Image (cartoon, rainbow, N blue to C red):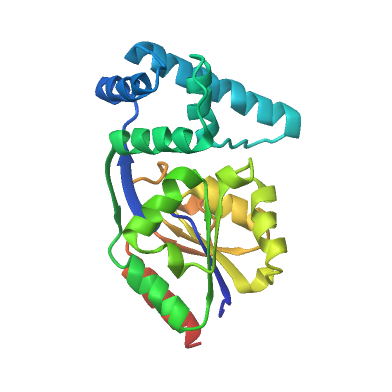
Length: 248
């Protein structure tokens, strides 16, 4: 089948990333940053307060909006960390604090081989290419721009903008209905059985599952009910499969 619209997950599908937030040095350096602005924390206190704010905010979103898969804006968490110490910080400082935390906790972030070639091929074929990612705008947009792929998408949908995330049908429908896409001409490409396959199928669109190095574990690939499936990361093979579909 020829598809008109290609929806992509990001991390584990186009972008390989490894972050480690529970390293003491991360919290030591972040506490030092907060101390610059008068928010005095020990590293341990900062870590505990950070996790507590996240838990409370996710609970509030779930309770107020009845979200099964709530998503929050991380800049609000970093802002609350200032407020908790009586510091009048603005949104810009909170974003900078969050991005500093992201840099501290990221070991690497890079494109998978073939990512640019795949996106370029689809654009040259006149396809519509969209991102549908469980992610944080203050991290993800900047990482995508640094990697040179942000402008390769017709539109980018990031879960932190909508207070919900995949596999929630609501998140899929936001994109599909806003863009008025034909569901039988749309396919989701991702690396997560639940979020990218089960979520997309519930939305009535086909799927292309790629098992990458950061995919959730799958013991039996026959349980992944995807329209197309690769048991290992190979975006060049994804491109070949799409080319074959286009030539049918």
